[in-house]
Image 1: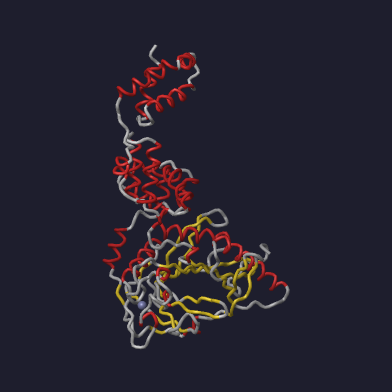
Image 2: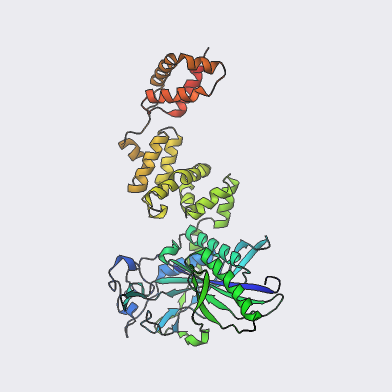
Length: 478
Ligand SMILES: [Zn+2]
């Protein structure tokens, strides 16, 4: 089919914003932390006479996202009601943005299927509220309003992606940028990021797009890619066999590896959008946007390029990005930029090992960028050794605290006592005369064994760098 047809994909992504309160009321934005229906009020229940108020923090995060995605920010924004009936939408409408979104016409650069850089155009970025959650228990359906009206951001691309692979690269990069900039944790398994892809095919070179189907909320980015590829193939088969495609929403069955129809797709006019009469237009002051721009970290792309220039491999950068640690590394190395590579290596080797062994991801652990940096610098200065570093890190990761305090409390600070070290070395060299002879005869590898014995003699409290130097000195003394 690839010879006859061209695939076109557009992607819509919903992201939950990590604000303290909901989008239009002061209820906590923490649906899981409360028993069902214990985090709701007349506003998010949509009771008549209640008045919504725009959450400034949600707008700030939206501005931040719009800046990170190179969007133009509209100075005046407003909210519309999107009218539809669904059991999880008790008001009968969702407050969203339609005519004038917060951000427009941004882009993310990816590598296109032709190997060249491709700018994926982001048509709009808008704010809206989430729906309630339906719980199917036994034969009954219950409704939990805790999630009703929690803040959501929707990011919509132009239909410019040409394959499942391009769509996958786009959403992975989008996620990395949002996490790096502290806009959302974007954990797919918690529904903090939900992806929908629109797929259509048309004869190669055609100026018009074919009938599109939408694939709803896939569980993972690789699922989205498979679903897009499957849909493109299915469209071709329907057309080839003389059938008619209908605009509809599809689900993805990951076991059968195929899509299935869910419902017919509405058009925008079906929603009867109109400005929410309870929410006057709001001004997004350019000075406020400038302040936010000034407070943002160096752009994601630039930071990644900087790390590569500093000597990190693609695999290292990937590992940092996959573990959502780029923002953490940037914060940790801000005060000691010349130690960035060292900190990156420690993150990859030691911190990710802890996150695996404890099953606690970095952003849910107790370690902060500052305490992590202090621990790395303590070891680098020779104040603690590798074993001490691991113990400090372990404590920081699980309990938090300050690196040096932990090192002192656990008696991990090394005694830089050259006299004691030299005495231990002289003792070990005397006990291991044959190894010393081997070393002097050219078998320099035995030095490691001698070093180990000296460290043991010092009960592992010696400073390895200083001892290494002293040992060299003694061994090379003829
Ligand atoms: Zn509420």
